[in-house]
Structure formats: C-alpha cells, structure tokens
Length: 253
Image (cartoon, rainbow, N blue to C red; front, side):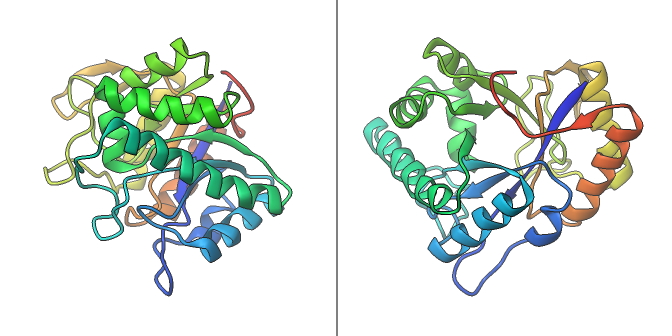
C-alpha cells in the first residue's frame, strides 16, 4: 500500500513567506505550488520548483482566484470563461518554471474557494477541467470526491482523491468552514491517527460523529496550518509504522 503526502507550498509573496517550505520539502512526496494569483510570485515559484526538482518531489499546480488579499479563500463573481482562462494562465506560468528547472508538472489541485466551488458546482468544475484538458490532459486532477472528480473522469483526465489531514469534515463530506469550530485540526497525534485510519481503513470521523467512507490517494497538509511541519512528520512516521509507503503520484491511481 502506498499514498502520496502533499503540502501547499510557495504561498508567500514578495518579501513575505508563509510556512516552512524548506523543512516540509524534506518530509512530503509532492507539492502544490501556488501560481501567483492567490499567492506566489515568479521568484518564489522558481525557487519552489527548483527545490522540488532537486529532491525528486512531485510538482503540482495550485491555481486559485485572483485574490492576493483574501488568500484565494473569498468567493468571487467570475464567469466560466474567466475561471477557465485564469486557470490556464496559471498552468502556463508554472509550466514555464518546471521546464526551466528540468522537471515536469504531475498534477493540478485548485486552491481554496475555487477548489470548494469546483467540487460542488458544475460550471466551476467544467471551467477548471476545460483548462487542464486544453493544457495537458495527462495531468492528474487532485480533488475531493464530488462534481470536479466526476467531470474530470468524464473528460478523460486521471483523478486522484484528496484527503485533507488537518481539516474537519461535515457529515456530507464537505469541509467544516474555517470560521466554525473544528475546522482546522492541529493536534499531531489526532491528525496522524485519522490519516492512518483513512488510508488503511477508508473512513474518517466527521465533526458530527459519523464514520464517513473516504477514498485516499493523496493526503494534504496545509503549509499555513500551525505546526504544519510537525503534522507532516507525524503523518509520515505513522503511515510508515502502519506499513504504508509514501510516494508521489505518477499516473491514474
């Protein structure tokens, strides 16, 4: 049994940095790299991709809404064409750096509010899938189960289902909104235990106490979660102890 362990990286801007990317890169097997809209800039994108290439870390695009102030976590009233072309623009930007650094893009996972909307609303899902299919249909769409995964499969894209290690789940499988209690889980032992259970047993306990069936091809730790490095290390060690190998996504699971 194996699973991918991924973190959102490159989420600074200019002189500002968020999270300990350098240390996380020594723990994870893949990286979702911010593409300049919700975070990231050309220098940071190059630095992050180069660091991934040097370590053999799988590089994925992390496109978001054009919302630096809100970190891509606010709703925006965009047309389907705007969403599609914004995602395509971000894929092209990251693709320039993967080419320059001698590596390749393996996957795409939409960030924040864009990802949440694409998971549940078809116009957003179709816009994201349209951009990825036009750019490179071999890229793996990484998302939770939902409309985006369904739309990607219908378009012939490979899909990997994402489990969010440090986020609370509602009974319907959606995430607890960040403004509500229980949205972010920061206890290393609790996070490691729930990840092992999700990977080996296919279930996660919701905030309402339900045992929710869950697929798990890749496990995400948010780089901006307090103690993210400790969470990632705890997950890695617990998975290895449970006999689970950690490796980047290489194709359709």
